[in-house]
Image (tube, rainbow, N blue to C red; front, top):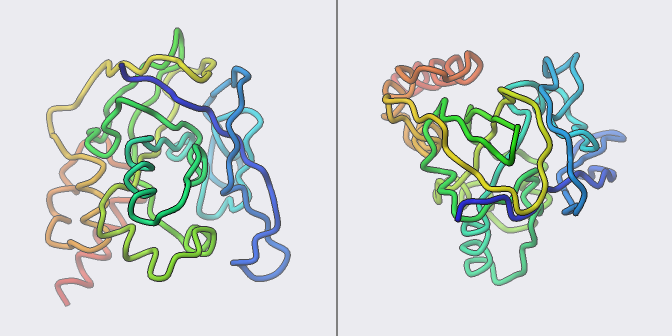
Length: 222
């Protein structure tokens, strides 16, 4: 059964991986309480993340409607546990929703999920790893290792607000016919620029990611 295994909220702490007195909410802790999810608005001027009670510290790079919710599969965390030889609890990758029974990386851009009774989310873009994630994981060569695996998890936007709690079922309501997946977009914008033309044709891909793809394609072509 496809379901939410845990709902995770940020434990804000100083970020030693950025200059100055920066804070980070990358560590997220499971909660047993129901959590309201709503569209947060723009990245810089909105409410941050989509989950009430969560905190997005770096508004320049994270949060906003396109990155309202971050989902990662428990099955993929299990893979990383075997690779890294360490325990990885739900929320350790900074995900709001740890899922089970959902092939998150094979989700199609624009795909819609119903979670619980009311909440409806839409798949938007893969997570692109940053310096904070690298420092948080403290694994040599982590960004390249993560990129090569092409298991980034996905961000989602909020189509219809609602509450989410651990155990809620996840149902795919709609899957676009273009077939461009989260993993495909991730591979294109990281290590496989030859895939860039294919993702630019994906309906529902946000303009920020398309612009990133165009720039990287231009660079790749020299």
